[in-house]
Length: 97
Image (cartoon, rainbow, N blue to C red; front, side, top):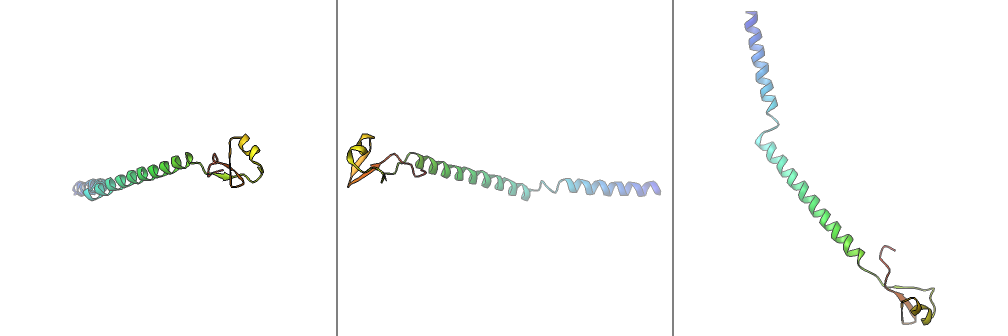
């Protein structure tokens, strides 16, 4: 009798452990994990392409800037800048300057 009781406990315990091991890999969980990974990679790809295009478009763009400390046309043109409307304009400035 004592041994039979232990067999039932062992069988119940083994049955419980086998069910517990397989609860993570259910079809619903697998679909959730797969869709989460797809969404994560899609978000990373979309974000990185937007950031990359923003950074590269801004690096190549120059913004003309008036240089108030240059007061005459000769001094302005001597350094390769443009004299326009009584002001010296430099077109090599970056927006991050």
